[in-house]
Structures are given as C-alpha cells and as structure tokens.
Image 1 (cartoon, rainbow, N blue to C red):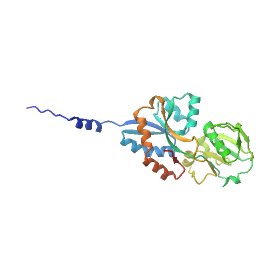
Image 2: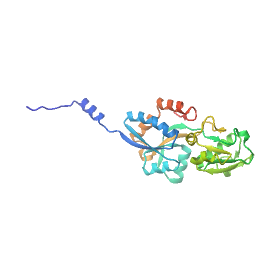
Image 3: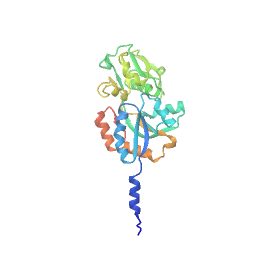
Image 4: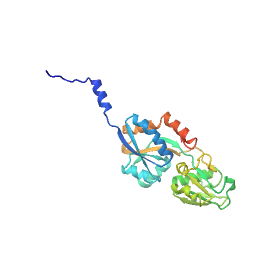
Length: 260
C-alpha cells in the first residue's frame, strides 16, 4: 500500500513563508547617533524580513561614494543640501527616500564659557565642506555675529562675509577633526554626531546652538535604481515607528530630534 502526503494550500504557504530567508542590506552610517539609531531600527526591520548590517564611516565623503558604487545599499548620515552638493559635484545617482532626524549644530569652546567672553580676533574653526561650513556661517549670521551677502542661499562661504565686528579668524577643517581642534582654537563648530562621540553634551555644552529649523533634517539615501524596491519601504517604515521615536527622545534628550 502506498501513502500520499498532501499539503493544503494554506499549510504550504505557511511552510514556504517560515522558511524564507531574510533579505540583507548594508547601510552606511557615521559613528554616534546615526549608528545608535539604526541599531534600534534593526530588530524592527528584522521582524519584517529585512536584515540590516551597519557599515561605519569616519567621514562624510566616503558613504556616498560607497553607495553610488553599490558597496552598500543605503546610507543614513546627511541632510539634503549636503546630498545635493555631492550629486552636483560628483554625479552620483542617489536620492533621498525618507527623513530621519535633525541635529542642531553647536559652537563649542574650552577656553570661554559664553559667547560674550569671546575676544576680538578669536580663531573659529568651521567644517570645510560647503554645506556644513555654510550652515555654521548662517548660524553666526542668525546670532548677529557676522553679516553675509544677500542671496547666499544655504551654502555661503567665508568670502561672503560682509560684516565681522569681532574680526574673527575663520579656519576650515575636516568636520570629523572638529572636536580635536578645541585645544587649538577659541571656538569650534561641531556637528552633533562628532560632538557626542567626543563626550560633549550637544544641549548643555554649546555656547551657541542652531535653531532646529530649515533644510537640515537628515535622510536615508539609496541608489536611484533601487528607490522602488520593497526593501526600501521596509527600511523607511521600520525607522518611522513610535519605538524608534521614543528611543531618540529618551537616548539623546534633545540633542537629536525626530523628524517624523
């Protein structure tokens, strides 16, 4: 006598689904909050069948190059003005698929406790990339420290300064080196991720701080050819959850602000 083993369609579908392997993607991040937030996203995405592997980069240049080359599938570290500048300069075919968090940039000093103590002729370091450097100059303009030419947009340069009552000396350095510059300059503008990595408190320590407004919300970027793939929606939806928002608010206590 022979026996036939028959699976009904619902049982077959359940069997296939349970055995389906998770899709794996590599996401580029910078150390600090971006990496920490994505760690909180990982278990949420895993429940949806997406395995996220984080790849940390120590600067702001390589993550987009790696993404464009296909070495990673997404990155989370930059705002739209920076992405637009990189695309214009390097021809990258990558784009934003979702907003993440805002990092109000801060101005720090080891030598002076408040801006009012900053002497004339003080040395001020700002990031050397056009987007973040321009962002700091706009911060100084908004705080009444300098004046800028009209119509400079979001990427003013040092040469666009038209008024500098304190005769500040601006020096441009790599953003990742900004915390180290604190020992050598009077004032350093430092991005939040590098500030936290260096043990600074982005809420309490700055002597000047950017208002959390404007176009500087960070984003998730992918290659243009991938933007409509199902894993992209899964990644963004996993990020945009109440659990991740609560993690950001609790972990960073105002230094990092959710933008969804």
